[in-house]
Length: 308
Image (tube, rainbow, N blue to C red; front, top):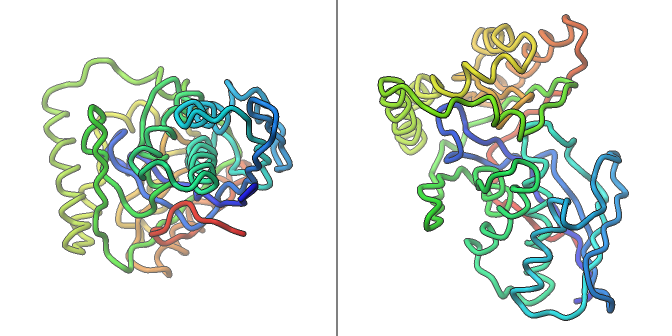
């Protein structure tokens, strides 16, 4: 093959209590890009998406930088052209940078005969995440690449575990028209965590995983409490607690900030509850004169896929 078109989905990271270690893939939205081999060296980036804030410098682009590393690792002397045809809105909190990184390394791996495993692709994708956030984390890029509901058990070495989850688990999302840079959202986090809060958080992470595996929706809901990150980041999202309260009153099991925000998500038992919760969250923002998109999605089991 000389070119390939792929799709990599948006994702929800942290999932409340699981900062940097839990994430799942959504069905939509997502990134679409075309990757082509070219004779000249380097990475050329073309943006035909709706958003003009994408850097065309490969070193500063979430797709370009991991591709440079990919080409070095396979000792390829020529280059690649990346064309974004569809893009998740940047700084939305649903893995925009991760989807770009995932789509690019997945496409390159297919184009060159699959030289790397899924785990190795996640490691490459994390290079793209570091462009946006300044840190190497996999809770968005791993689900976007591999699909499903994932646990990042360890980063040194990288250990990604696919979790089982209820078939009828749905996610409701409300994306207000504000921007939060991942790097800025990380700066507000405290460097030291209270020991009692850490114990509570560990229990909730374990409870959430147990609830997913046993299809215990009640356990899933009461385990989504985040006592470490949410109290700090909530201030970055206008009317966050009103939005969360509306979701809980309208069918949500639990509600939290998606990634670094501003998107707010809720896990729900069934499509109808997710539809109701997403509308309720959206209405809170709209009543405060903040335009807001909403989505309802099951857990996407596939991750990145070939489109052509």
